[in-house]
Image (cartoon, rainbow, N blue to C red; front, side):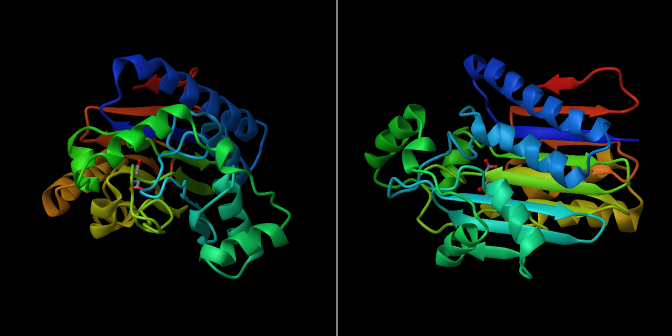
Length: 301
Ligand code: ASP
């Protein structure tokens, strides 16, 4: 059994952006699926799947990301291998085209889990990763959004989510032929965020979690709320301790997010057998999945 599930954000995706979301997640899934079906490992499949969405300006990850209050782009990403529980993450990193690849380097080439600030730039250089210019990440749509937000006296992240502002983070979960479950998540965070703000996406247990004996989870939505309920690990624990299936556990997680933290968002879940589940409490969520038991890919927005 092999399986791959991806998401490209949960929010009120406007009608005129639906097609771009469908195309972006379909292309990403195809890239990962090809790797997995040729016997490739889950880490490579998740990295390449997410890189494709980071390069696609449709999403709030890599190129196309939201801009912070100072007009800068700060990116968060994480990846976790559910067999070894090894994980790597980067937070508030600037001038990096594919933060998911840097998170993978942290997982594989450092003894740490999460790097930030000057250290992460140094680590990228030491490992031969080129920095890009801000212009390679910034798109006109987000520059305009940032300009319009500067005229507001106060802008809170919660207001952003209430007003259906985009939460276009990307994520992927793979089950490979060796039975490894691997999860990755990548984001530009929230619009006009305070410089240095870190969301759920690079925090293991909050935006990302994998345990090959149980399953994997990648989250999107209002990060401050997701952190409060440690959403990814909460769903994994619910599957583990209550023997819940992925659908029930995903729903439990989103209910908890709403009840405990007044939060909005969506999750993709893969159980240890490779069965995908999705749950969200936003008007739309971009998601796609395929398993070796299916003849074609399901793409839904
Ligand atoms: N969860 C992300 C964050 O708060 C945002 C998103 O999902 O789009 O940084």
